[in-house]
Image (cartoon, rainbow, N blue to C red):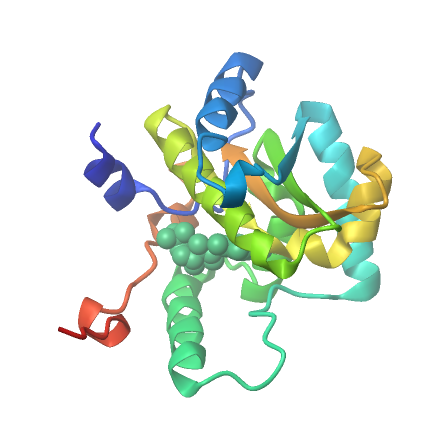
Amino acid sequence: MDLTEIIQERKSIRAFKSDPVPREKVEEVLGLAIRAPSAINLQPWELTVVMNEERQRLSRRLLKAYREKRIQCSPGNVKPMPRMFTARGVASFEEMKPYLDEIGSDFNQYINEGSCNFYGAPVAVIMCLDNSFSQARLVDIGICLGYLVLAAHRLGLWTCPIGLIAAYKDEVKDMLNIPEDKDVVIGVALGYPDWEHPINRFTSPRDTLDKVVRWIE
Ligand SMILES: Cc1cc2nc3c(=O)[nH]c(=O)nc-3n(C[C@H](O)[C@H](O)[C@H](O)COP(=O)(O)O)c2cc1C
């Protein structure tokens, strides 16, 4: 599989099989993910891998926190977004919803509770950043995430980034003994897709290049 195919084929999976992933395979993925570039080669990412029973234990805590606090998946904007972005989010949700309607699942419940449950994946990778860094270093975490999802795909594993867990960072840190001075940035669900589940037929749309690129020549 060449890189173009990997990029074109990868997508977020929202229903995983419970089949375990061998630790060596996860190590291979993470070994490639940390080849990502970073400013001054600081490699500021700190990863916690939570597998199998422990992943389920983490999700039970996250689900409890979600039911108490009701913080949902959201764009996390700090002021109203330009209409273009809102439209993309709405379009994506509208295109995803019919797949959940097929099985009578409520959209919000499926996405929020599903995110807390890493959509049933046997492996969750929690990506942290030391709080001595400025927000600029989130770029490095982002690129490591990008490498991770592509490397996983190359090795036959599928993923879903889970930003929602950052809203429940206190619970995550408590459960996983993550030190006080580390910020929980994002989680990633990692495993094998349940291709029988309708949600996995969904592929998210993209705007065309002319909408996102300005050329100055
Ligand atoms: C930073 C970030 C946070 C995300 N958080 C979540 C999440 O909490 N729950 C979820 O279902 N998907 C989450 N996603 C997946 C996005 O919804 C998905 O990447 C986007 O819709 C594009 O679809 P694709 O990954 O299938 O190409 C997240 C993705 C990123 C990059």
